[in-house]
Amino acid sequence: MTGVTNKKALVIGGTSGIGAAVADALAERGAEVVRASRATGLDVSDGAALSSWIVQQGPIDHLVFTAGSQAPGGAIASLDLDAARAAFDTKFWGSIRAAQAAAPHLREGGTITFTSGFLARRTVPGTFTKTAINAALEASAKILAKELAPIRVNVVSPGLTETEAYAGMDADARRQMLEGAASRLPAGRVARPHDVAAGHLFAIETPSVTGAVIDIDGGALIN
Ligand SMILES: NC(=O)c1ccc[n+]([C@@H]2O[C@H](COP(=O)([O-])OP(=O)(O)OC[C@H]3O[C@@H](n4cnc5c(N)ncnc54)[C@H](OP(=O)(O)O)[C@@H]3O)[C@@H](O)[C@H]2O)c1
Image (cartoon, rainbow, N blue to C red; front, side, top):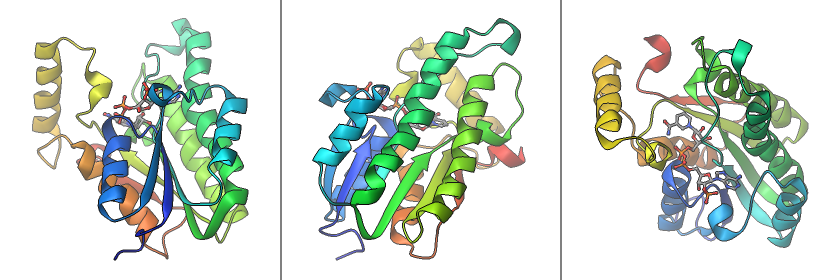
């Protein structure tokens, strides 16, 4: 028995990468896990569909949001702002709307865990969309942790993590990117999905953790 045994958890983004690893870890610990994504028929950029899907789940114990790994790159001066807005609709507004819809249905001891990314606090030209989404998410989680207390609200901030998010890259370019990053990171390795999922599990299972941003980035922020 663990703190999540027999608890109900929604993992939005749970069909791939980090979300799938969180869902697997929760299920291994005996939780009832519901995974959602476009592959299961839920597009979180459709706000009404997202809210009504969450309400249909009934009372829940834990909400995890990992959906939306794609965002346009490029300098702000020439950025496709419509594409940037669409990325916000999925990851930022999706997270906020999911929290808003789930909060009234969370049982005592309930948690909400978002997923940001190390670019939230790293200044890299050409990464505006990811930086802005992730920074907004981290700031919002702290507000939510106070407004929704005693529901605990936390964020896990991954660094480069080997997931399906990079499946579209040429295989050699992908391998070079991952090996290059591993050689530069203080931890000497790029994270695997289960490394990051350990952060979500820590946030869910540790009763004193709220308003926290948990960095699992191989040391990217101290590099
Ligand atoms: N991997 C990294 O290097 C890295 C680094 C920093 C931060 N992060 C963050 O970690 C989170 C998870 O990333 P990941 O690498 O695990 O990504 P991933 O493997 O691409 O998984 C993303 C998940 O989100 C779902 N999703 C995407 N758009 C959606 C939509 N509109 N509606 C519903 N579900 C949607 C996908 O399923 P469908 O396609 O079926 O919808 C999938 O289940 C993201 O927030 C990402 O920004 C990742």
